[in-house]
Image (cartoon, rainbow, N blue to C red):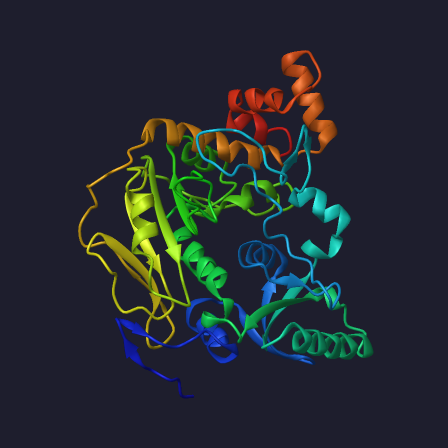
Length: 376
């Protein structure tokens, strides 16, 4: 297998295509690569497949026109430090797009194994033609189309539109280092929305250590999936009890990330900032880290050489980590039904939920433990 290598401005110009998509999985994960009637696929359990789709935007093959993806459906806030809901997990005063609710509307999401099929295409017409062929083949063999997930590889775009895939690889990498991870994280309108964030807070570490309900490192959406997967126990021994946050900016079509990454670091909220690029050789600055792929397509993490200290737009770390602790609780309470939420609220407040501010004041005043006990 040969791959084109061109060295230009410290970047190896190689795009993530159908072939190296599978090689990346082969080199970095234990998911099986299998042959199906519609081509080679990554076989993934429903739990990890849901996380994959939520990060990358890959779609469940429920129809050939617009495969369903949960990406963007489970947001809470656009900005850190405040609690103004966007339509996502909550809509006004009700729980809206939660994994539990989605499991009832679309039962296939959390049943059986899924098969991720990368599909290269240049135009939407070409994509539709390929998907209709796949659908006809699956139906002819009496195979549920919703067992398949479509990963778009857009050959007409520089970088093949694979930035979200790099966000997935980065999330998976930092989970191993004990971070709660998230892509497209809330920060501030004037600063931008980072492509990747990783968090550690003492409060949630105490919580998961006590109940062994999650590993130390997990995707934030997993907090909202606990009810669906009660049997997933993780026996951990947390020795690190310190607050920390890291941030990253992902590109596949360019290597220009410096300006945006500096905006994030200048807040003083993050201990490290990472450039995320599949084939970059080295960071642009010594105080940047890098998430990339080596010549064998293995994920390579380069830590910053020095600490960034020239903060220009300092925000309060204390307020940020206080907000992060609350932020995590909203995903935890998303395991409830609306009836359960209303009953819980009434039992503690003695009244009905009337406004979003009622929910905000209530959740912020709850502990991880008392929310978890409602459905565990």
